[in-house]
Image (tube, rainbow, N blue to C red; front, top):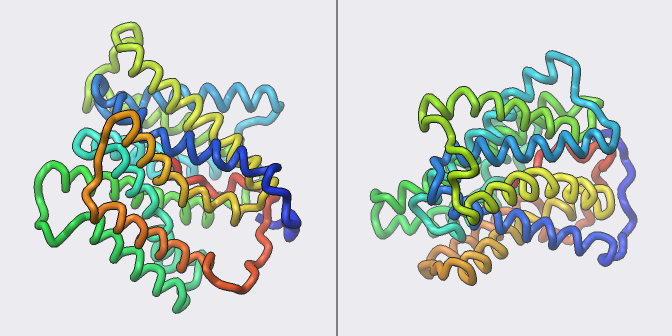
Amino acid sequence: MTDHSAPDRPAPRSWLPGFLALAAIWGSSFLFIKVGVEELHPLQLTLYRVVTGALTLLVVLAVLRDRLPREPRVWAHLFVVAAFGVAVPFTLFGYGEQRVESMLAGIWNATTPLIVLPLAVLVFRTERLTTRRAVGLALGFTGVLVVLGVWEGVGGSHFAGQLMCFGAAACYGVAIPYQKRFVAGSTHSGLSLSAAQLLLATVQLAIVTPLVAGAPPLPTGLSLPVVASVVALGALGTGLAFVINMRNIRVAGASTAATVTYLIPVFAVLIGTVTLGERLNWHQPVGALIVLLGVAVSQGLLSRRRPTPVSIAKPAAEPATHP
């Protein structure tokens, strides 16, 4: 990101509808995962949704007359991002939601920024650790312990499911700083890079899925809710949502667009409650609020100082943290 200009206080009506639509789409993804794993192995579900998402973005690429990257170096780095930013976390959320409520998986997705920061500071050297960020991290991980309910003891299927969802968020924590370190300087559009990631993730999953879970069943052998969930996860949550996110970044700026992270668990909880009748223990929403407070502190969202304008020339360099 090299452009030093940013939007000057755009009217909310220009970006708020897309912002809320994105939060609703990504927040509902946890519901669709929950429905999908009722008939599909998590790896099979991930393969189907990634294929659908890749086809969706390829169509958008063709319409916009964009093209995929051609440099071998870019493809090599995107292979890593595809694994840690798509194939593995999508699958872990599927495994996790076989054991926990969809709304709880949505809460765990919100921990991603807390994992990104220490890795960006210590491993990829793309960020600097400050006192404010350290306090935010401490708050956030306190919230993680509260969500887990560690005082109730560890073990059991439900606890394992939470750890799987946390592991999915941790994968995003690796993919985001890695992409920022090795791919952010690319001249390719975000749409191009994302389509390439999904194509590479498709190849990875096409190799691993039959070995671990067996050949995926034909769509004709699945129930209508499962087929609809796969289409929604791929075409909406993995395809169209990225286009909406790019527009949000261009219109509202990267900092404002990134705050969608705070609304995703809200929509996940509302949708899980209304459609599946799920219920949370008291400590899980309390822990979620502490996590979000930690994220807000670490990102300086509670500071009175005006944030430094961020570049929006290449919104794709910062991968979105969607389920």
